Length: 406
Image (cartoon, rainbow, N blue to C red):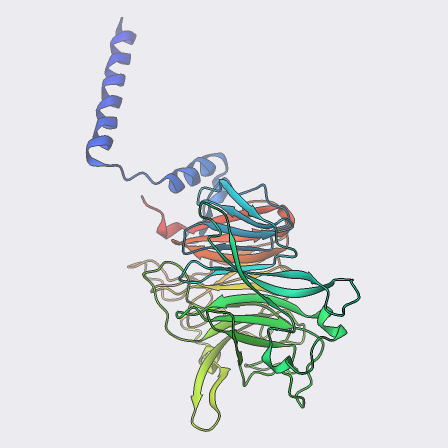
């Protein structure tokens, strides 16, 4: 009988607290709950002080994902072997857009989507299509009715400096490696290739092209070196990013950008390139030498440390006050995090007494929650970090432990 009354009291108490949640709202966070469940299974998922915690389950059902991006429409876009996979924020599959050789995805403020890939096109008239680099411009990518292909930028025809020289066999070796948007919906497209002669009218293959919102080529980012490593080089660019990223409430009016250089000759695997208005040369692009100010009273490691990366494959600059910079390296199988000043680490908690940035970078080869196998893409949305873990066929998610709701 005592057991019976105890059960009744327990049910009553549970119903009272459930009613309180319905009447007054609950502070429960689904993402936090997922993390806590995983932590109960494996206590090693928690950092000892401040660090990133995995949000489980990771997104699966993708095939060799090489990029991940959360758009202004708050959908998750993944470039993989099948083209572009579109998921919602819970990881539920929504749509697939077949695009040959998809490698990079971005979205502008109009919610127009751009995808770097390849296009089969007969350019010699012999009936045999060539496999050329292309950037696909889509509208309505995730909405009802399906995607609308607005335009396709094709190498070399989208480059005004090649208007007279036309197609050449070396164009098959060219790649469009990244695309990034600006506040006025212009886009940057990073390009690599074997022809980098500085004495011809045609601009080098190693370059960053600029297009307006309608796909017209406005030229390229002048002032960058396509052949020699420096603070303003463009050697084998593997990705490009601006700080004009979701949400819509955040606007970055600058034309500055970040690139990753996958060349072993590049001293700096990641560069921050700034726009300058030269009184003689006009608009040009150059170095951000301030990132060489290594203040060891503030941090122990830095973005511009020489040969800091083995093969940086993607970079993402988060919006907002922290402006954290995220880099993935598919040779060290790691995710790195830096501040806007180039200090490695996250800001220490208030009143902690810690004066230096706390290192939060992590990785290593494997399939565990803190390990990667050729990570190739990274992005951030609503303080959640997404990593395209290519070799493990998954999209990993992480959140800083100090950002979790208690």
